[in-house]
Image (cartoon, rainbow, N blue to C red; front, side):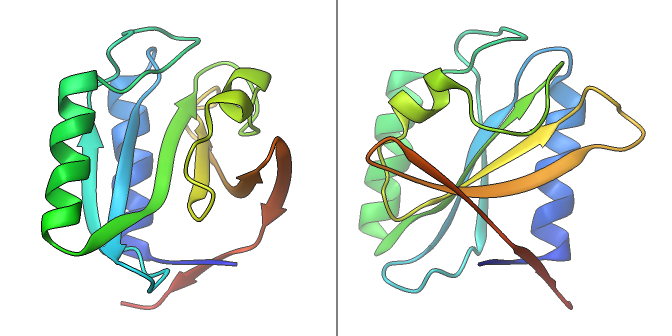
Length: 136
């Protein structure tokens, strides 16, 4: 189960809506080994595409190095789908490289009612998990 604060959930949804019609992407870092999302890190979709996202390689390197320096890890990796449901695509599954991360997808196909879901992706297998929004 992903436990996330209402503030962090809101930031992910706001980023997804702001970048629409392109996909948004980013990370929430947390203390290594904690499974606790704490630090919101919106990233640039280097593809600037409504159907695909890719972290900018230099930004990706810099952010992962910064997490290492802070003894953090990517607890949540998120991106949006602009015209489809919030479910990992075949491409999303093939590119999932952090087996311990929660993969959050937000669908912005209905901007008035964005869909927010979380998954574990390991060895090509997708498992949806419950999301608990923690009180502030």
